[in-house]
Image (cartoon, rainbow, N blue to C red; front, side, top):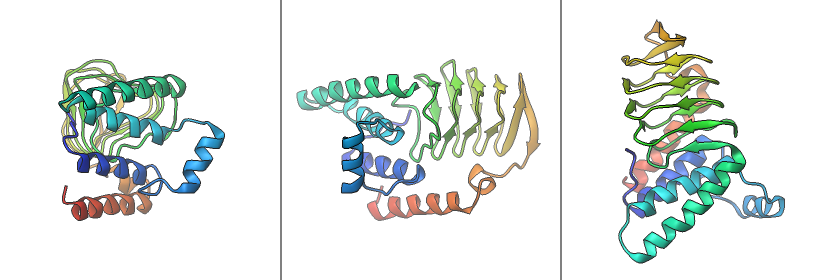
Length: 209
């Protein structure tokens, strides 16, 4: 489980998610005013509420419990609008959600850092452990329990129901390994993603996380 233990970690997770989703590390005044005037919830807001709920749920004290309740309400409200549900304890930092449409990643699953989850992707069972740089294409379904290594990419409309190693492309229903030594999605999808990852890792080093 990806549990955020300190406020410094919380700040880093929020900033890492923002960078990977194409935003500035911190919200600007222009961005804040635009959101308030449009009254439109965004994926980046969902990720922020998800990370804050993760943090406050695991803190002691009355104030922290009240904050957890507050962010739980915000989290539940926005997920209904965006049609997203990803358990707050599931994903590592740098999570990329390209579309606001029909995600379902339940509790008791673990996904590493720098994951991409496309629309209509589902993880229907618990006890799935997935490494870093995971890529779930549109309509992909994961049925656990299982373990996937680092750098696993799942093709569109595939059904994954068994474990596999690292750096592979899975496709089919049920899915099987179609390519081995498959590049990480950040390499496959262009250098701008590598630059974002490097930026996040520099931030992590600067913040001494």
